[in-house]
Image 1 (cartoon, rainbow, N blue to C red):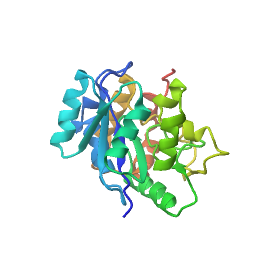
Image 2: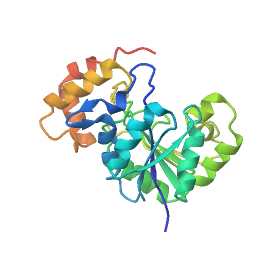
Image 3: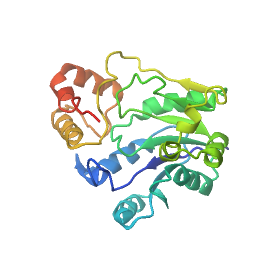
Image 4: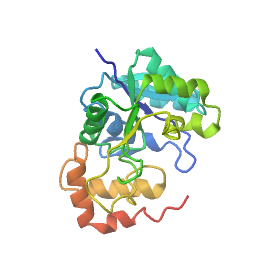
Length: 240
């Protein structure tokens, strides 16, 4: 049986919006929305919250544990090492990577990514080579072999911080597959939580969305946001 966990990286010390994933959003924290959506992805073995070993992440780890999710703690700077530690603990064959600043992660999109990976012929399947989905709808899956090689060989700081960059930068070595967004013109949307403006976007969206934001899928979200461009304007002026 293939073991494919979803590993969600999360920490409290965000530079632009400290403690962002523990902020309230539609009756839960942003973190809970993310991991609860991840739990609905088909074909996965479990969801693991990979957080740091710093004291400021104790509250985050406690919440995830109370909610029944496995928690793995490791280095704040070496996120790649943190992922490897979590994946090794459960004997993973492959890893689905989603970040905790994606509270509207869509299981349907992830299902497509995982299904394509399971067809074989790819070391990494992703949604952003190139980026055609909104920032915040990203999901990728890669083999444990590729992750182990990255862990052994990656020495550049950005390779250790961003987990899959080592793999993605080597298309001649690894077989990369991209799943493009079926809707055009939304790659500039920010559906990620990085700034106060991003938080305001999510709160406004939840307040105005006619359905249950906790379970809303990409198609419904896309239709609603497209019909209300003022929502997009809340946070698309962010420049980093």
